[in-house]
Every structure is written in C-alpha cells, then in structure tokens.
Amino acid sequence: MSSNKIVIFSAVSVATLFLSQIAQAGLFDDLKKLQQDLEQLQSGNMPEIPSGSGNTGGLGGGALGMGSTASSGDVNADEADQDTVDAACRAAMKEGKVNAAAIFKTLPKPDIQLLKSDFSIAPEKINTELNRAPKANELNADVVSLELYRNAFETGVIASLFSQFLDTVGNKADYMSIMKQVANSDKGYDKKKGAMKRDAQQAYGIMLLYYQSRGANASTGLGYLKASAKGDSTKAMISTYQLGHRAYYGIEEPRNLSKAASWMLKSYEAVERRKRSAMRAQTSIPLSESFIQLVNNEFLELVADPAYARREMYADLSQAAQSMRESMTQSMQNAKGRSPDIEAITKAYLIRESQINASIMRAIGQEAQATIEEQRLQKFADDQSKDDEKYNDYSYTTSESRKFIVSELKNVKALDASQKQKFSDAMRELALLTIEMKRIERHMIGQIATGQIDMMQLTVATPVLTSVKVTCKLYDALNDVGTKMGAPKADVVFSSDAEDTVINMAE
Image (cartoon, rainbow, N blue to C red; front, side):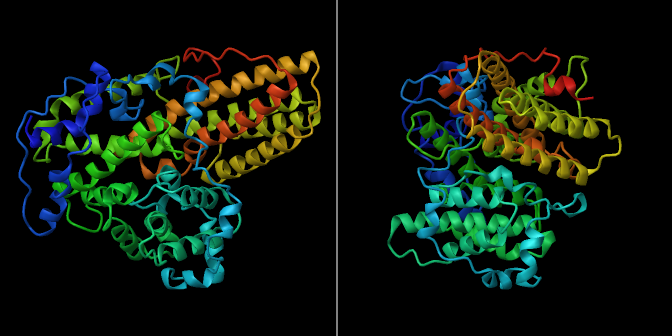
C-alpha cells in the first residue's frame, strides 16, 4: 500500500475497524504527509492531493464518537455497553490522577492583576464578568461553550484546573490568572513542564476567545492557541481544532477548506488516539463525549463540503456519516413523532432532574426538603414566560439541591427496607436519565458542529451540555452510600418508549 493511501485510510480507519473489527498496525502512525500540508499552505503551495479512492466500506461508531476504536484485533467494546450508566460516566469525571486540591501547592499563586493586559476592563471587574454567561447576542462563532473542551488536555493538572474554573461560581479570575502564569512559564527541557505549558496555552487561549464579549482580547487568545500548536501539534488538539474551525467558517480570515482540513485532521487523529488509549486503560484523562463529538462531527462536515477539493476521497465516509446523523435525529423524536427544540429539551431535563432529586430526598428521610423541591418544580413547570435568565436561575437552585443531597448523604447511617427500595428506585431513574442525556448531548453537539443550532437557542442549553457530568457525579455519590447501606442493585435498561424520558416529556 502506498504512503498516500495509508494517509487516506488513517482518516477513515475507524469506519473500517467497526465493520471488520480488525485493526492494521500503523494506520495512525504515518501522518507525515498530511502534517506537512499546513506548512505548504502557509508558504503558498497547495499540497499534493493523495491518490487512491479512499473507499472505506462503511462508518463505525468511533468516527462519530459513538464508541471507541480498537486495534491489534480488539473489537469495539464500547458499542456493546454504550447504553449503560458506566459507559455514559466513563469519561465524565476523570481528570487525571491528581489531587484537585493539592495541585495548587505546585502552581503559581493567583494574581488577577496579571490579566489586566488581556482585558479591556479593570482587573477588579474581571471576575464579575467571568461569572456572567454571554447572552444570545454576545455569543461568538469561535467558541459556543467552554464545557465542550473539558478534559481535552494532556496533563491531569491542567485538566483539573480547567474543570475547577468551569465549576466554580466564585473566583474564576483567580483560576484564570494561574492558567496564564503556567502558559507563560519557562518550560526549559522539562518534558512535563512543556506539556503543562502547552495545555495551559490552549486553556487560556480558549478562555479569552469565549469571553471576548466580556472584555477579553480575542486576538491574544488566538496567539496563545497558535503558540501551543508550534511544538508537537499532535498534543494540541484544542488548538488544531480551533484553528481548523476558524479557517472552515472564515472567522476573521478568508475561508480556506484545505487549510481547515489540514489543521482539523490533526485534532481528529489526536482524538482517535486518545480514545484508543482510554479503551486500553492507558490514560487517566479520557476525553469528554462532547469534545469527541465536536471534533468528529465538524471534521466529517468539512470533508463533505461541496467546495472541498478532496471531497470525493471521503464520499463513502461522508455518506455513512449522514446516514448516522439521520438515524440519530430520528431517535431524538418523541412518542408523537415530533423532534422537540432545545428549549423544550432543557425544560424537560430540568424537570426530570428535580423529580429525581425529590425522590432521593424522600429515600433518605428528607420529606420536608422533598416537598419544597416539588413546589419549586411545579412553579417552574407552570411558568409560560421563561427566558434564558430564568433557566439559569432554576439551574443554579437545582445545583443547590444537589449540594444538599450530597451533604445529607454523608449523614446517612442506616436505611430501613422501604428506604432501601426507594433509594434503589431513585438510583435507577438517575441512571436512566444519565444514559438518555448522553444520547441527547451527542445529538446536540453534532447539530452545533454542523451549524444546525442557532446561537440564540444555545443560551438555554447549558444545563443539557453539562448534564452528563452532573448526573454522573450525583450517581457516584449515591452508589457509594447504596453499597454501604445494602440497597438492592436495580436493573437499568433504557427504553426510548418510556413516558418519562426527557424526549417524550419535551413539549
């Protein structure tokens, strides 16, 4: 097989793996030609179009992030259990083998004055702005949500720092100032420091791009992303995706599909490598489903674009990807055959989550708090004049309910037979919600990447984009207590026909 054909097959190998369940060593290793494409483009030379048909014979789950890629004869194991809560939560909470609190002992101290040069507002006002989500008319084409980039790092320290930045409702500016200091640090010849610096450059760069409507300097953010891609670009999957994304959509630069593909292929291949490592338990930082979907869907959309010169080489892959998208879209229809919009899905999710929270409270003897939760839920469900602010407010109070549950779980010393059954039933409902939200997240990310979701709609979608991490974290806490208390393990078999699924509850 020629090296050119190897390059083509490397981009579509996951499709072949899914059908044949046979891996060929080296398919992801010979990317030298395509890794040189961007440099040729930047020097004004069009890279040679590889020969070969690029016929893949089909599309597997890995190509759309539906499963994991196997190698050396392994089968796609994730396909068999993707509708289990363990599969849904596999990558939702792991952020490297690090102590989230202890990492600050080795990191620079917070200093928000260091952010002054990167914002058009006074340092003392930055934290307030970072805690305000952009409104619909403030969203930018660069980054629709920072949640999509969770865990897309090489080092556990930066993955944890980035997640803590996302999760805090307090001093975000402190976390951001630490990230900038690491991004500007002198790595020397220390490989570990070099990886942390590259990760921090990506994280800080993407933060600045996201918050440009809040005073952040987007040009500076782009500079950090470009800097991180100058070294080992195969380790800079955020930067290579983002630079490809900007070239694809022509964001503040001429639209260039060849340049976009050259950048984005690097991110696509890096994602596939990480997925394989996660499947073999060779990484402690498995990628989030959202980032996998973001990269895979947009790359496949790009190579299917009629204006893309090499489109014919990916024809089979693109056709199969379209079929997969159509199948996923059909599965997102409710029992009446309708496809609910984002607002309806978000409302249904928040309602279903609150119902389950109330059930958990009753199972652990918190009857009064459960009643309060149900009253709050009823008021939200009856409100016909909701806007994005009300969704954000309800989501915040729901997070307070979860904190209450986790706090009270620590005080549970024993459960009687009735409580054990209620506890088990609540865990089952939470597991089913988690499984469904992973499906919905996958579908929604695909729509975002292919431009099918309007920016205006995304203002209410944050609870959905964070739902899997949220439900997995609570499920993990419940599982620990349930095991200690001897609560029965409930069978969890998801059925899209059930009346209380989010899709069927969405109006």
